[in-house]
Image (cartoon, rainbow over all chains, first blue to last red; front, side, top):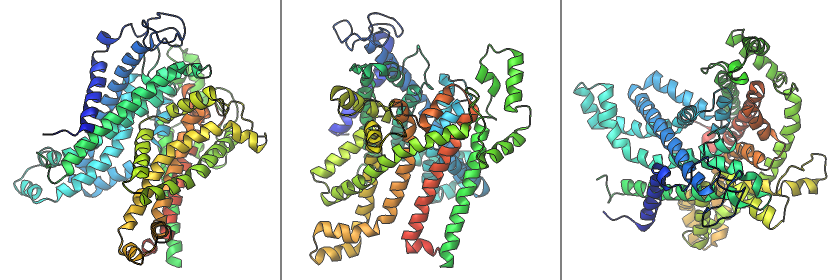
Length: 270
Length: 319
């Protein structure tokens, strides 16, 4: 199997980010909340990216921040995919009233901008990591639901599904053994896009002060903490931009490749 | 055209119904969720008396349905209640800020829409050549960075390093003359333009490319018309409906993007008001702002639908 260059670069960068997230305590030179120097020191041999607004090592903060951001985004993506896909398939298989009920409710949820609805909900919920994951995951599962249902509707009318039904298989079998394997590739390609969206979403929430709470670090929070420095010409708040952009672009490259491979006639689903 | 009027009336009624359901959802989102609103406003260390007082003040002792209808009734009469934290009337505060937000969104739209359509046309004209490639690369880059970071990048390089424009909009005064106001919002407008431009451009390109595959375009080509004339005279009018759709959806997105950008540039608008009060857990303000943002969003989508019905004769006569 040949991997195109763009996809290879994407894969390598994505892998580096995930490895850095997993092994953060081993890589980071200092602790996440450890004050090691003066406020906003420029980069030096000791502090590769300089220090932040209260003298913590910025590189360590970025590595630990990446860990939090990637963890929350991954967990929320998994939640959004399991809920969205299962409900989408269920709506297809059940059809009729259930389908109408669930689809119209999803339409209703999607008619409110995601960020606004998240803000409304977070105004009465305690802002903790599990709550963030739940809110982000459930709000985003509406998008996955739409896709899953659209894909499943086509599969549900196939002869082999009918054969399975005539054989006497139940809904559970049809969903997991007939529809899921055939719907997997478009869903996996979409997963990349949803993951990026989650990274941007959690960064935005943290930036607004409604995501990861201090002293924990995440990329959006680092921007918030160091934003005051911008006016004095200190660019500490801009490092997360580089991190988020490279992560997003490399995941995009991988997702594009997966999509091309699974939709092209020659590549096939093998 | 009675069918047309009927169709439009149906669509508008549907929009109003949607808005009503959304108001229920927003109200439910702050009420039915696990956890006590009074408790989360005052924190874990609150005394039982303080909790009881706040519950009474918020009317939490009434049943949910009663509270919902009194809230909705008030909102329909322009009475959005008072803020818990500042004791100020929410409607007057929003009235002051909504104008600022619309001013910002308006100028972003004025710049972004023509630019996006022009660049979209350009991308079609030079398809698969370098202008098209530059435009796609730009699109990919701009959807990969959250808008608040684009804001800080511009603030850092243009506002602070080059000193072309004021780096924050904190000095914005609604009663200053137009030029001063425009100067102080130059950077936020640039960011918002940037954010919606990419998406709008891409969709315009897709919409026109779709039309370009039609037989009448081939005829026009065989007649020997110039490429730009074909696009402008034949492809563009037929892709107005999808383009208007894209524009409205992006304007709706603009209204949401404004929330974050206002916080970045310390601009006294609705977004900052909402975010401030979410962290203060001031539920009445959050409900009011949420309702208004949702209403604007639904309104934009409604206009998009209406325009596409008007622009496409086939949609006027559903089979």
